[in-house]
Length: 126
Image (tube, rainbow, N blue to C red):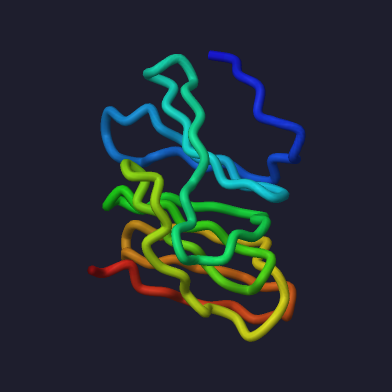
């Protein structure tokens, strides 16, 4: 599969780690997209609902079908991948943008790093 994004830079991508899925997400300047490689690279924008849109530098996928994106506003956005809908916004850091985010399956949590020099561990338990 080969597919173009748009004019905004992609800064990170993550794959759905669930068995059999061919979905992935891209995060970057002024965008968050969810892609389906099984549908020929179908690309759809993440829907922010009542949450403030921002730019993103990183993203990570958990085992429950949620995608997390580290925002330029020091918040972590939680998207329900199948619906493309932002379902929560986590005030993870006090300031700065979030350039580092990873999901750790063995302890079901996110680890994030901010440009303010702080690290956070966030539980992904429902």
